[in-house]
Image (cartoon, rainbow, N blue to C red):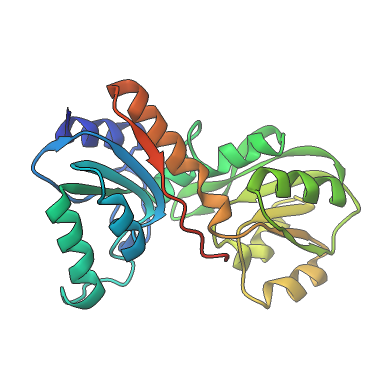
Length: 251
């Protein structure tokens, strides 16, 4: 068993939780405490009811998620929200959430891990939001089809392509999750291809007008790597078991 306070202190420091701005509903950091001891770590993308039900099995632990419990803002403790809290508290399951801090971590972040998986060369931070750079931009040599196949292998699922840019790719921007709505700003950054998770319908025809290749890999699929990496890091540092609970949305 490991002290919850010790694990939280490590996560806050490693992820720079207190210094990276985020959406109000993210509430990065410890969202639910337990009695103070952790014997295992579970990683998942979302703190949804099915995830918490599954993670609660196995005794006191720490659930690390990318999307926490408070995206909808203040809400009454009733219905599914009540059940999530009760199940977690009865099981001694603490919950820690990390959104943008985990996206942009230079080693364990969703962006960096995806960039490595597709062999992006010389990745550098780009795309300013809230005063921080939330994406990675780098060089890449190959065709659109090459990149589509590489992404599908990395993500383990289909990739939807808007083939509006050059057939031979040289500069890619990567922002995991739901950044498809930012095609105008991404195109203006000088990349010819954009890898993200999802976007609204209008992002596709707009990308066509901007002559930008867009690879939609799925919001969920592009954001599984970070929670796995930080959970594995903690497990190795503190000699406790960890696992990933896969609960895909298909989006």
